[in-house]
Length: 209
Image (cartoon, rainbow, N blue to C red; front, side, top):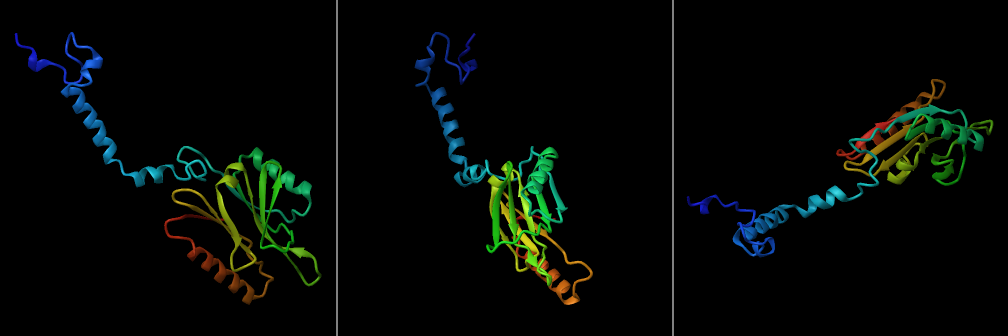
């Protein structure tokens, strides 16, 4: 019986060593097939898959917990550590903070709180010179590593943060005025908030807290 047509096109023929078979036509076909696969890969896609992957805030298989909290004040370092401890216990990656009442001259201020990072925009003083207001973000290590930028918006009541990823993630934390504030100030705040939302790129994922 003629078995020449039944030969396996990949494995070497009986009695032929594997090293010798590398120079055969079957081996050449296999190498060319592998080359074609490599050539068909889009290098831009490979770069997109790998760029910033370790720093990305969101991953399909990971859970990210976000929260928001009106803290009344965070001027005391012990209060900051207490907040960080409870966030760590509840596995909260990003916490939006309102009314921290911390006043500083820079637009944003970063401070290490335990194993987390507290980012704040400055509060302000009322007519009695008492500190009030202020918004911020408390980030765990993963969120801090993914942070690209954080800055106040047009309003001192709004802080916008952008995180690495594909797509990027934008978190907006704000402190809305109460009913006792002048109507003009309330309208101005919501106008600024609308502007902040409109400035988020269409392909980004946005979260408002």
